[in-house]
Image (cartoon, rainbow, N blue to C red; front, side, top):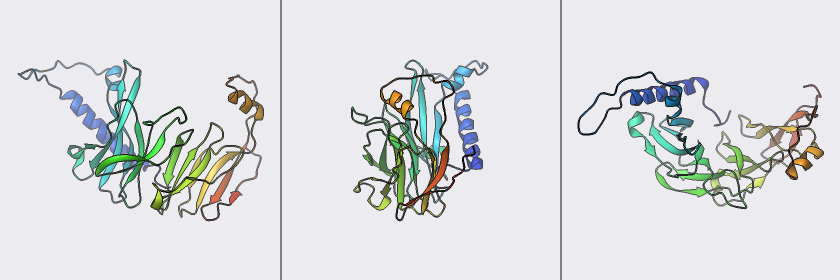
Length: 269
């Protein structure tokens, strides 16, 4: 459904390709101090594997010509990692790889193509401020240029996805436990104000576009534990024994009139 994930088969193929390339580079390192020198082979260790830059967030273009992906580089001294976005031709392979973002201490992840392939949206923490936290969304062309901000939400963006018909971009944002869905028209993604489309007391959890792009389905708790919410709002963390977990229901919201419809009403787990 949507553009949120690749098929398992395709992911496995990409994983095998990148692992193979990484192992080839690792095993082919030679000294360049003027004369070639043979590196004494040794067994690979767990720490060796952890030092590899890792590829992820694979997003093939709709025409199958290009692949966007992130590369995360670990820094064990600073106990953190940093990721940037790369573009590679599916025909030419690794040799065609081109880096698109260059943030030394920020992260760019989760690229998603527009339906026509003229731009893509990604998440980044590059513009955090006192009145904004988490990741925001940015738009960028695959042929280069500066990334432009799409959102500037107080609580950042938890996740997002284009509709299959390419008309809407929906994202989830809000304070923990109070997240709601918002939408932007793709045709005016840089000029339009985001529109909040869900307004429940409890927050939206998992959600997914319908195949026909007319409806967004989502999970929402049936009630809110106000005592626990108050504790969290006041900054208290309490290990509550036998805490009641709210039941959740499946809902659908029409992208036409934004009417919410509860799809399930059973109290069974």
